[in-house]
Length: 545
Image 1 (cartoon, helix red, strand yellow):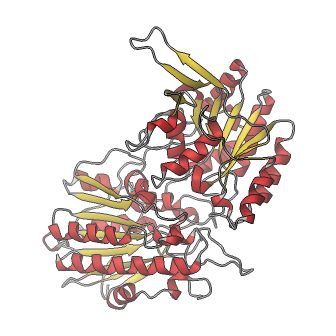
Image 2 (tube, rainbow, N blue to C red):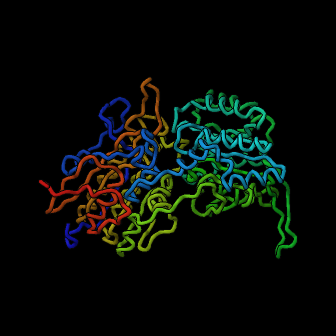
Image 3 (cartoon, rainbow, N blue to C red):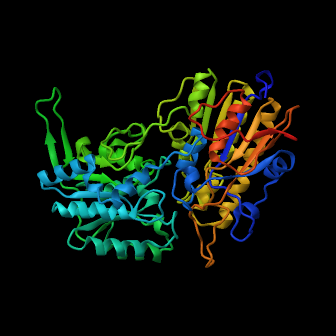
């Protein structure tokens, strides 16, 4: 494609969680009315892309993931997942020998403190590793360090009410080694949509009661806490943060540094924390509250005080993360991400082009750091616009449209200005709503995204641009398992790829592609050569070629 004829802008719409599957049963994509996507498929070339397993840096047969899907889309190549390094260390019985984990254990042993392990107790494989959790418990036990597990319950990357089995395995492994201190659904402990009240409920249960405030809910055993939630019709993800047995919170006291220029009394925790999720983005809000770093401006600081004095659960030197916790939080990391260079965003910056990244808070880091290969700072010429995810209701099933209409308006307006060469917009709906297990709500989510794509398409084509539509992984196309039960987890399905380009030089698409081919395709449309680091290929070919 000649540079003087290149389309502008090139817009990439990522419909997160929308995979390809021919069977209609439990398939929200086929059950939804999608006139806009149907029209694009009828008019423009389209294909399917592989978006799971080795194609996104995972093991053979592993379902795709949002973070790795966006990483692959932006990098133009599959990048090995950090979870693979953790699995390798666990299988080699070397997890406890990791420099940062070893440091955490040595501090706990020296201070005669407990080790608090915080993370998702699940074998869903997306956010945590159950085997890594067991290995960390064993590493602490070897050094005679008592463990307190704060068990966050899944129900999204595994069946909605499957926590009992995981808790049973955990309880057996903890015998003589430690306790479960709290349980909490990921709806609370792993919120990343800015619902800080939910995060605070988990913080309160884990840390301590205020002298004048209400006590955290309590249950005799983890199983009692889950049973009580089930009796109320709740799934694992919605289990309220609950203290277990006689757990009273983190040990600490009021302290003051009288050598400081302005001495201040602070209630400070005196124990060690380790966040064991293999993805840090879902625990960033809780980690911020626990360490006082990266708190959003709207946080009511009186939530984090006792009798007017600040509460710091874990000083910076006493809280460790298995993987990167995210922007604004600087903490010891056992398995830091390896930077990915020569991504699509970086190549556009090299060429002096302008780019816009759009999403709602539910997928904010996906369009920023993940798409940029782990880089947090925007590139030259890059603008990020993150719209607020809705706060109505307990789950997105109650508001399946989420922020799709507002995103469509923002993307359409940006495309119409002609200010950007490239625009990335990610819609969270198909994935976020499918994770609730509610098929009818997910159908509505797909329909909302369909309408949004149609609106963006019209704005892009009116400007002479090109619209590319794909997904980071599958989910909503298979929401019922073989037994007929709700299945809210990711899939290994291929994802769609549509190239909607109105041009005098029409193109067809190569078949048999994968997510890493999208970045080279975008560069080809923009008249740029892909760097050697990109292993993908452009999917464009002239008709008849």
